[in-house]
Image (tube, rainbow, N blue to C red; front, side, top):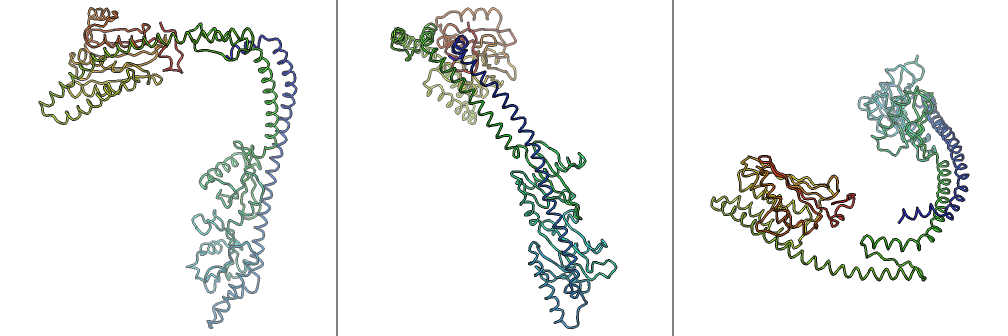
Length: 603
């Protein structure tokens, strides 16, 4: 219907005029939209780069301010009289030492509370060898978890030392906390009396960078070695570490630029100028910060699409109102010509053409009734003939099977009898309980597999059944028990007389390479037949009448009954090389079985 309608639209002068008017209206809008999108995309990209750089600088300023404040705290409190006075050697009076320690711990606790964002403050006394903390109980240096930090300061010879994950990678205290350790007194020419330790939880740095408005992007605070101090990324820890490693590698490769792009993201990187040398990395997805450009682009695109759709629907609507009454009768007549008398139309108007169309509908209904009666008679006749042919197969197969069971019973091989009976019951259920004359191909192949297993239990020589079936033909309906006689002939007249250790039977089901019809082929590597025997069997297959005997003749007649006279059978055999039987099922009945396959003109 679509193709004739389009042909009608291309020939209609009225429709052509409407189309030209719509196109002339849309072309200027398309040009204007393209210019607007290009300009907005460039502008937004520049704004994104500038905003990303400002965000990184804002984070850098906050971190550097925090680091400078740590230095000021160390310098301020290391010179307070309360701390140096508490670092004198222990007094002979125990009570004085206790009072001194309490005063010092109170000072540390008060200082931590006043400053507010510290995890804690600790003082190491070189005279007593103790570490006093605002949050922990006093402990000796050896028993204190801060021993590596204090020893790192004393061994460095510096007045102050900043410690993060890069400084002591294996120290667990640095995993979630950053420390600044200052010498008491700060003057390197004076004798060391102790050390002041300030601990800041990394979550404090996390709060500082979380206050940076970044949309759906992320900002990360890293050590010079790439270890994460804090981040706003929502990724898992392992994924985020891989992301950071990839960004830093790219940054180093490009020569440490302030900004660069990777994938669809804009990256800004800057390193602090203070003693910590931490790195701030900001990643903003281009799509997220280009919302304005996307909004403009989407709005323009939607408007254009709506205009085009409106114009197209207008053209199609007017055209269809002209096309529908003119084509309805032509379609119905074409359907009758091809034999589809069920086609009818209800769109005829109340005029002369409509009256003629209703007369065509009445005529089609009467023809359908006559065809249904004829088809019913033909189906009844064919069903009776198929049942007569099928009744010849079952007794013959039962005789061979029961004879095999009798042989194993004489030999008292009960295991084989049990296995054989299981196969037999499965096959009888298929052949007797299934009342359908036609079954899907895959069920028939499953039945053949049981049959071959039964044969292999009976004879020393083994038979291998191979199947090659195209997916679209797995449910092809075929007469029930139609392939078993072919397999039986291949075994008893081909493979077993040849006396080989292993025979092979191949069942191929595919589309005919030239005609596109279903093709069933049974091939064996048995002893084959002479040319004279082949010609005799071919002549027998050409006769339509049913003759006495069981096998290929009956199978061929059953296929003929199902698929009609368009079906074909081919027989090829060579003495000592095997036999091939091929059925070409050329029939309109097979079309629904392979809807995705283009059917050829079958003979």
